[in-house]
Image (cartoon, rainbow, N blue to C red; front, side, top):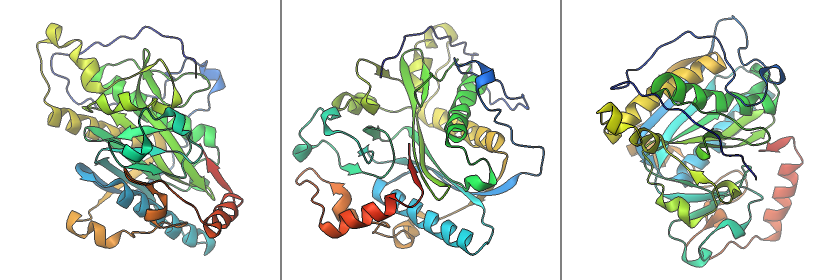
Length: 329
């Protein structure tokens, strides 16, 4: 993936207040706005979206992944019965972990997979390898695109727009998207990665925004398969301008501010009314399955000690699953 380095501007107020705005949609893409679909859907009453807000918690990747797939399965069952169901948003942080997409190449791992620094998961999402860890806010929208737009290009651009608006409205950071690539960039630094799976028009997986993330683990991979480019974080970008502002924002405060902005902008871009639901972490492991829809976690998890071996039954299930209206991006 070849990118052209671009100029970026960060204009930080002394201590960034949370800005609430009813601004109309404005394209932040380097693609001419005439080529982009307008993101605003309608002036109708927003649809309900249940939100499991665990942004202060470090949730094991395998549990969150299984949880998503159980929700997808429930929504697809409701759709088959012609029953309405609300959209769902999960927002959280993960323990350190590397994840690969269904077609990811191990050549982008700068370590022996038998001795990986962290657990490595091969998932059914699109994209190449990435890292998740503390200080990174991860959003998993599980929405029925039949109620929005049955257009994967629109959905990806909408996810990018959420992040672009957060950076602009809350931190005065000028971010952009690039033609032909998915994600959000500030100059030559990628601050948000996006990779999804869509099954029968129900989305899962989503976006990861580096807020206060320790970027060191990214050095052990080629993030998203993009060589000779950098990964950035909101904290790092703001830090370049702290001497001139005289304002230091603590990590916890920066996470809180970014989280609030993400929820607001997601609600605005997707025209959704957020309804918070709680799930006690004590009950989280009990309410999330340890198996996914295709194979057990043991089969999909690549640990530091062994590799994955797929049996014929697994390969048959994969084939049947992929032929039934699933999209990987």
